[in-house]
Image 1 (cartoon, rainbow over the protein chains, first blue to last red):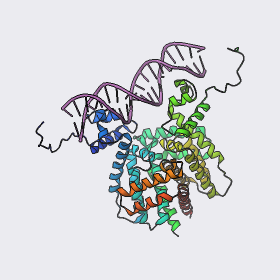
Image 2 (tube, rainbow over the protein chains, first blue to last red):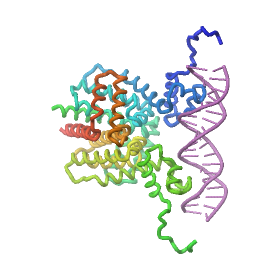
Image 3 (tube, each protein chain N blue to C red):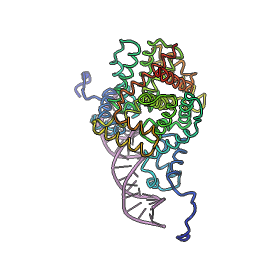
Image 4 (tube, protein in one colour):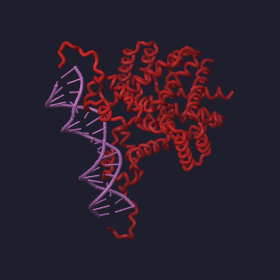
Length: 222
Length: 222
DNA sequence: ACCTGAACACCGTTCAAGT
DNA sequence: ACCTGAACACCGTTCAAGT
C-alpha cells in the first residue's frame, strides 16, 4: 500500500512466534493451564483463530515453548560461581521457585520428558554435578535421579496447597485435607503426616530432599 | 417385570462404579490416556452417555479411581517381609513396574498430588522408611523426597522411550532423540548423555537413584 | 506470505424423558 | 432408582478466501 520498496521497519503488532509465546505465558500465569485456549489466545492477540498456526505447530508446541522460555530465563539467572554443593542447591531451588511462580510449568514438564525445557534442566544439573567430581555412570545416575526428584517435587508441591495464594486460604485447604486423610485412614503414619501438613514448609522440605540426595552422592564417592 | 418380590440375584451387565472403573482401566491400558473418552467408555459398556454420572462424578474422579485401583493392587502384592532397605527397594520397584505396565498411571499421579493413589503410596513408603529407624522430621523429609523421586521418575521414564513396546522401535526412537539433542546442543555433557541413552536401562537407573537416596538417609543418621 | 473466520470433527456434562 | 440420548456449551485444527 505504501509502495513496494518501503520495507516497513517494524509493526509493533505484527504476529511472531515470540509474541505468541509471550502472550501464552501471560495468560497461563493469569488463569492457569487448561484455561488457556486457542480462542482466548487469539482474542488476546486480536487476530484470527488460525493465525497462530503459521508460527507454531499447535497447542502442544506452544506449551512446551512457553515452559522452555520460563526455564531458560531462570537458569541464566541462577548464580553459578560458588562451591559445588551450594551450586547444586541454588540451581535446584531456582527451578523450584520458578515452578512455584508459574505452576503450569510443573505440570507441563512432567507431561513430556523430552521437551526442550527438560533437556535444559538436564544439562544445567549435569554441569553442577560434574563440579562435585562425579563422572561417567555415576554422573548419569545422579543426574537422572536429581532431575526426577526436582520435577517430581514440582508436580507434587505446586498443585494444591501452594496454589492458594493467600495464607488463610492455604491453611483452610490444608486443614480440610488433613481431616479427609485422617478420616479415611487411621494409620498413625498418616495422622502424623496430616498433623505436620499444616505447618510444614514446602520449600524447606524440598531442600531437605536435595540434601539427602547430596549426602547420598557424597557417600558413593568413598 | 418378573414380579416385585423376585430380587434378581445378579445381573452381570448391571452398571456399577466397580464395573465402570474396570472398563476404564481396560481402555486406558489398550489405547492410553487422552484416548479415553466418555463416549468410548459408554459404548464399551453398552450404555447411555450420561449413565456413568450416576456412579462417578466425572472424568477426573474416574481417572483417579482407576489409578488408585492399579496402585492398590500392586501395593498389596509387594513383599514386605525382608530387611528394611530391601523393603524400600522392593516397594519403589513395584511402583515403578506398575507404572511401566500402565503408563497412564504415571501421568495421572503427577496431575493431582492429593488423590487417593498418592496417599496410598505415601503411606506405604512411610511405613517402609520407619523400618529404617528414622522418625519425626527426618521421616517426613525422607518420605516426601522418596515419593517425589518415585513419581518424578515415573513421569520421566514412562512416556516416550518405554512406550515403544518393540525393541527396534525403541532404539530407533532413542537414536532420533539422541541426534536431535546433539544437533541443538554441542555441550559434551549432552553428547555423552545422548550416547548413553541408547543402551541405558531405565529400571536399573531408577534403582541407582533409590540407592543414592538410601545412602543419603543412612548418612543422615550418623 | 500472512492472516481471517467459518466450518469441521470432536469433547465432557446436563437433563428432560423414559422404564 | 437407574438409565437413555439428544442438546448444550465448549474444544483444537483446517482451509478456502481474502489482502
